[in-house]
Structure formats: C-alpha cells, structure tokens
Length: 193
Length: 202
Image (cartoon, rainbow over the protein chains, first blue to last red):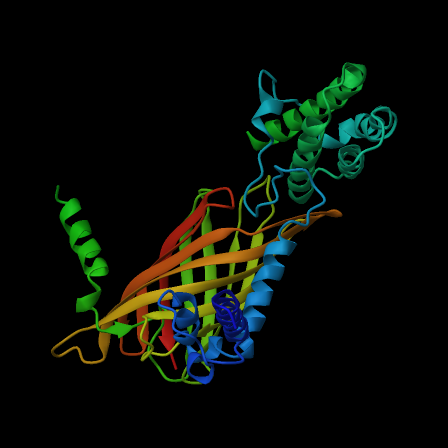
C-alpha cells in the first residue's frame, strides 16, 4: 500500500468514526480511532450528558434540522405583524393621513372592490393572491377581535403590495389598493386614539 | 451613585461562579415533589400580565413544568392567553452547571394563533445562606431559547426561528420561593416582561 492510499484509509476511518459517534452508535473508546489531535468534535460528543448520547442525540439533531427547515415555510410576504403583541398599522400607511371617523365596516364595498376587480387587474402571482385573500377577509365586524385581525391582515396586504414589481402599467391599480389600505389604517388609528 | 453600588454588587455576585456552589436551573422551591406559583409582570405593551405555573419532579433529572398567563390590552386588542408545558432535564452533579429545556407553547390573541416549540439551555446558581436560616438560599438563572414558531391567521401562516431569553432571581425560604423574573423576545417585536413571582412547594 502506498503512502497516499494509507492516508486515504485513515481519513475514511476518521470520517466513519465521526459519523457513527454523531448517531450515538459508538463512543470514542469503542472505536479504533486513529490519533487525531484535532478531534475535538468527537470529544465534545463523548463528553455530552448521558441523555444526549446515543440515539436520542441523533433524534435531537434531526429535530433541530427539521425545525430549521420548517422555519422557511410561510405563505405571507415579510414583514407581517403576526407577533402576539398589540398590532399597529404600518407607519407608511399613516403618514399625512387624518384618522377617519367612520367604522371599518363602512369600507366593505371598497375592500371587495380591491379584492376583486382591482387586484385581478394586477395579473397572477403569489403576492396578488395574498392581497386578494387579505382584502376579502378584512370585511369584519367592528369589535376588538376584528380590529386586531384587520390590522394584521392589513400588514399582509401592505407587504404583498410592496413586493409587487414596480411596473408603470399596474401603477393605477396598485395605487387604488394602497388608498383602500390607507383608509383602513386610518380607521384603525382613529379607534386607537 | 447610590443606585449603582447595589447593582454592581449584584452583577459581581452573578458573574463570579467560583463562589456559587450549586447548580439551579429553575426558580422554584427545592421541595421534592413540586410547586405551584403565581406571577405578575409589566410588559413592553405597557400592560400587566398575570400568570400561574406548576411543576413536578418526575425523576431525579427530569422536571415537568406548566405555565399559563393572560394579558388584557384594552378596547382595540383582544386579551392574549398563553400556555406552556415542558420539561427541564438536568442533574446537580453534571460537570457543566446547565440543564436542557424543551417545551410547547400555544398563544392565542383573537384570531391569531401562535405555536412555539422552544428548546433552551438553563444555567444558574444557588447560593445557600449560612447560619440560622437553614434551608434558605438565593437562586439566579438565565435560559436562552431558540424555537420553531408558526403563527396562523385566517389561512395565512408565518414560520420563523425566534430567539428569546428568560431569567430570574429570588430567595428560597423553606417551602417558599419569591423573586423577580424577566423575559425578552428580540425576535417578537422586541417584547419584554419584568415582574415578580412567588411559588410554594409541596
């Protein structure tokens, strides 16, 4: 065996030992691990608390990876106000706007118009679907629960609208939806005063 | 100046581990079976939070805990309810003064539902008092957490991996624990809550 081949074998043994150690199958003393002064990773595994060694450690690792992967699964365009704290309409919707004296339900027709024909003219995309659904759900009674839901749906529609391409052809329709969102934000801001 | 001295003394006591002999992952009475407690806190939303908690020691290394709280916001926002159940795994004789925590939390605020699955590492110390007050001690702990979080509202869902930090410090006096606690969620609108907590062991 040449020196190149022998170093390849040692390297493979190292990799195998690390792989099985990570699964908790073997511990350092049960495996013929060649000398490796940089083998701190395996040492960390072996010194881990007993409940993390063995198959449970592997399950925990897989679980963490699954959580990380799952954290990328959303059907809204960020940012949205889905934190369980008080919701306030985006500042961009409230700049220069006087809080409106009417109720959220008074905007029923405007919401339906924005969710239907106006959003339909924007074409078909994930963001347009989000705008349609959010605007359609905005038609709600005027209690505290409905206002909170409306505020969060407003954040969905606002973010989706901002993510649309800045195409001059769709500008009038985007502006129409923005005006409806501004009116809704004005109603919510008036209630909060 | 008068305020900074006690704060410096507190910080020094927390940051010198060689003088802190025992591990303490939980701010709870040291009774063998479990405890029940109550909590009141002020939050970053300028509202008060009221909560309760209970725990039971299953084995020498495993403690099950449950917590719940409610926070009323006023006319514009519905009341928020939170419930958590989880485990704390740790032994006093581990070489590192830490415990591992895992839990599941459900938060309801109107139509918004948030499921959070946090895991964390709790590190803390317990300083026993000498002299007449046998069985009493001062406990401090801090628990950084990472979580899988899924918030749903009217068919929309948003998932994320937020970081949060909880901690507390207080006195164990026999079967009773009393102290202060805090939670901070930089990933959730930088929300925080600071309050008082008391528990009775059984």
